[in-house]
Image 1 (tube, helix red, strand yellow):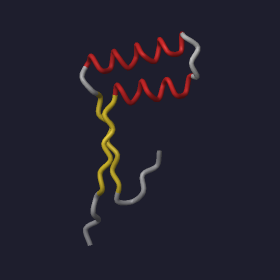
Image 2 (cartoon, rainbow, N blue to C red; image 1 turned 120 degrees about the vertical axis):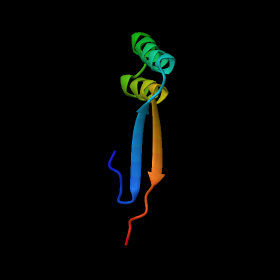
Image 3 (tube, rainbow, N blue to C red; image 1 turned 45 degrees about the vertical axis):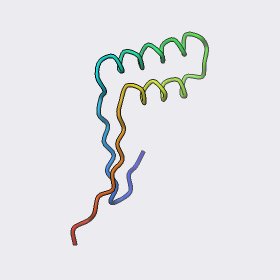
Length: 59
């Protein structure tokens, strides 16, 4: 993911229970035979808070 100029993307880990739930859910999904890429993506978004913020350029 490449941000455009004037856009800031912050990835912040969530509290411990959310990380464990995301990892456990992803592991269970892969173990059950679900497609790996969507399962890992959902586990990532459960465990990490993604914030997208517009930034003004000082001119």
